[in-house]
Image (cartoon, rainbow, N blue to C red):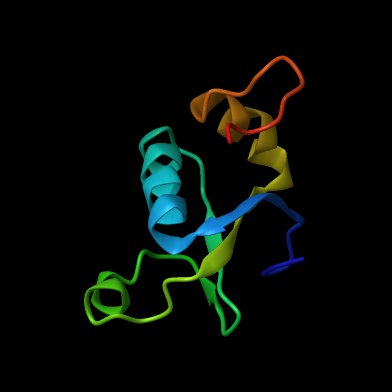
Length: 84
């Protein structure tokens, strides 16, 4: 649960890759959240990235109601799993 809604983790991946996937999702109208060990991030904190903030693995989440749409945007396979 995040802000009263059920969110689903698409994957855990390096921050820069997650931010790229977020841009793809955003351009398709899907809301996403990155979860670092420290916080949930709704927006891409460019200043954090530019200043060398946390760049390790993060969780990439979408609202459960937009899961299928997110998987299609990311080019899911037959099993509905996100690309690896």
